[in-house]
Image (tube, rainbow, N blue to C red; front, side, top):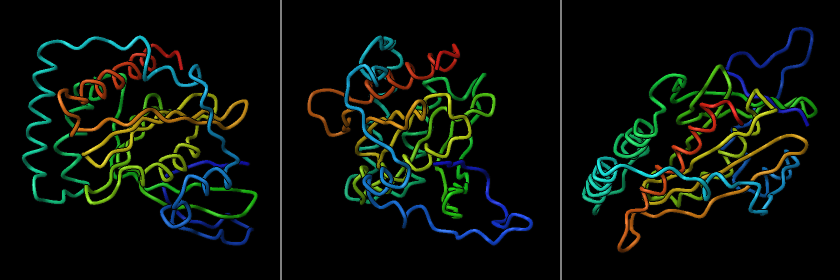
Length: 232
């Protein structure tokens, strides 16, 4: 199975028939559909995805205060309202990525990135849009997929996995984060020697007695540290 994502352009290869174009959101409404299309399987062994549980960095008092403020602001803004993806990104995703260090060298950010995932065996292109992508030296490192608050954030998992399968560098792990603002969940995907993935537990802003944004930021920092040291 050959799948590779690229910025969108024409769908015709010179001398060949036009490729069929399918919307990613329509083609991959479930994780099972992604697993079948890309021969992807879930690996639930703890050692496969230790980055969300082990060697997590501690947060400073200042970072904790900032996260407490982010949570308070988000809960206020979302009280009685359904927030759009752009509002969720403004209130939470952008501040979290900055706190995690992804705004600074060696990382680059891309948002609203329209891509086409080409599956050569089927002469088909899956076209979609990545909400936020963290890049280092052209390699995809962290993909963030957001949903409106009226949608369960788990609905973003199939699309995120499909986009991650299309990452141009197949030798490295790719990480994902899905959210609707109310909840967060991390993903890890590798394609060699076989395509495998796993998910973290979910983290909720409605957790009683503690701020689970602490966990989200610690995991983001952990992933950024591994990537920054070029160890993934």
